[in-house]
Length: 114
Length: 109
Image (cartoon, rainbow over all chains, first blue to last red; front, side, top):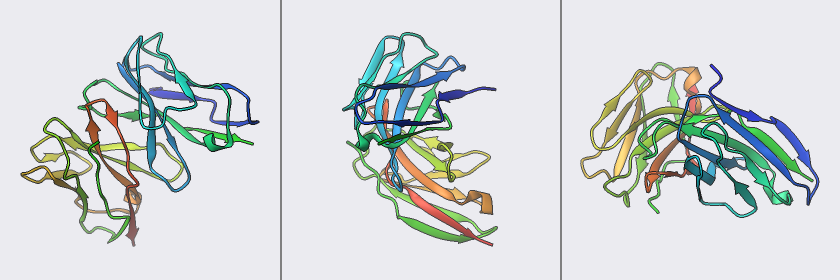
């Protein structure tokens, strides 16, 4: 069972570079979201989506773009990476829009911006 | 935004019950209460969730106060594998699930 798959697992960028973190789920979940986790901290919500074509901002959306063209995929784009975006990024999905169901998390993508 | 307050850390002895508290005094009537845990170097893992009534599953029990302003996650017999950071979360606006700093649980053999 694949569940939620994130790629890449590790990435090093230079300031100003762009990249996309990929997230795919094979559970036909409508709800998907991206979090970042800084060292010693809890997770902070970046963006979320309640279905294909629908996205919304979370707590810390600045510097990140998302789109949801299919149910399965929810990529997170960094247009111009900054050292403050060094973090571990987690993608999650759920079958329920209303916060009523279980969130399934990927294994994380560790990003370092030099 | 409805927020949660948890102790920074707690300790437990192996095979004893653990009660992890969470305060959420500004909870709204439709906010679900979720608990997740995170083991070192892993993504968070679902533990349990509920709305008004107490809930039980194979991992834990969730006791929700009658006024819903607080809840308690109960691990019936802690094991060393239960050592993790436990997060209490409200599903704000039913789509926006925000994690706080959580409670770091240490289990002593």
